[in-house]
Length: 421
Length: 170
Image 1 (cartoon, one colour):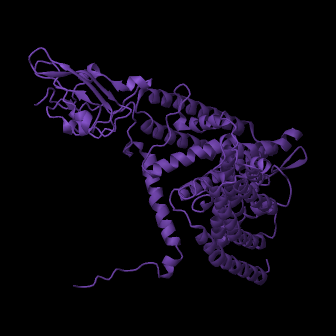
Image 2 (cartoon, one colour; image 1 turned 30 degrees about the vertical axis):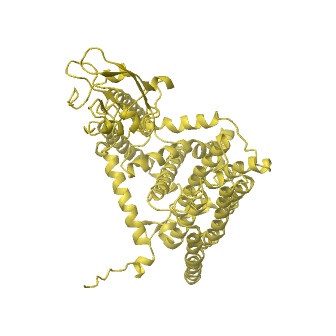
Image 3 (cartoon, each protein chain N blue to C red; image 1 turned 45 degrees about the vertical axis):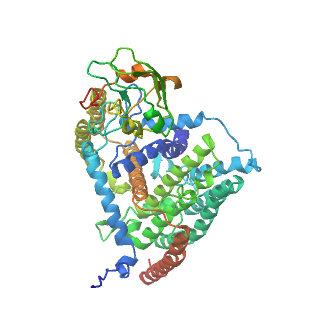
């Protein structure tokens, strides 16, 4: 149990990064399609089970795995050429390590932090590795020995100098507000209530810093509207023009992990992390019976709504009707099992240990839902806005976001000093 | 002539922050997304292999066919007009004498290489006796080997028009 509780957050990190990649690719393609009045990939199936096309990214990944390892002849520095995708992938992967997934939990007199790397550095660790990702892009562009790649690398480096300062300064004002650099402390702070009824989330306390941070986080993950480094309409594919097979896939997965990591960081700093609004850990411990009863009411309603939606939209031919039928059976069985479990918990009575484990599960779920919503916003923004030219990115970074974040620091510092918090 | 003054936007503070425009744009895409998600039947996409397109017009240039006379023999007189007009040089004709006193000449061989064909319809325009047409409505042409894409005279005669006018009008 002791070892499991130490490994558990690492398993969660792997789940939140590697397993969400296919989900995110699928979400990206389906959301893009629905925004543009299309259907998107929905035909890939295993024995007729389509799951709305979620099999497609797995098939794509298999294809990339089995492709030939190809090295262009003109690449002279092969070490850097091979190293670059690894740097991009590893740095975005590592920046996920310090995100807290749930409040600290005490089991058998041991206190565990649900954080893959239980250190107090928090924000500093994230920035160290998030900043390192751009080196991978620059090295990739340079070692590819291709003019489009080098232009992509140039754009990436011009972009990194324009947003990182504003990003850091936006965080500084949050550090002043929370009085800590530990992400765990920050999330615990956000469990309180402002004036007794508003959750004290970072976005409520510091809307300007939140806006600046979200904009710069988009730039940091190299996603639209700041994806000039891989602007396919101008410079083929930018820094990864010369890459294929799994080396390309590492760039591709690195981008999605970076997106997920940025979402996790935004959620942790500005949207209350794992906190469920109006229910911090102590309240959840004391009101566990009420929460379980509320869940028993909400879950069947939600799944009923989902089943009705599925029956309406996934029954245009025989194979889909069969799939819908199976999915209906599966979901109803799952809900019934869950209800039985809840009922058993209510009747047998909850001891403190069980109640804290249940709190942890609920908090992890809340965090996952928030991260997925933030990821949806990333996708939604990508399919709404055109790309920024890279001098426009610099203009935005240096002349708008930097003064605003400085101003925000001054105001925050004055408020903190005057109120003496 | 009056001068029409075009209002210039973008000078007010609200426009300069861009935030209003950003949120308006995001509202538009979100509305599209939610309407399409709640009812996918309103998406105009056609689930292709199961649902075939029903809106092919009679002017659509599909796979070629050779038309028939009223007695069901071939209408073509092997005049080589279509092969001459063809910009892709994909029509190969060999003529022979026609002995049944209906006409003087007929094609012995009439091959169309569909991989070379650009479906421009010039052969149909050039034909003086309405012997070649592209009104079969066949838009999906599939074969497993290259040589199967070359249609011979029998295959072309077997194709039927999809929009009436079975026989040649000439």
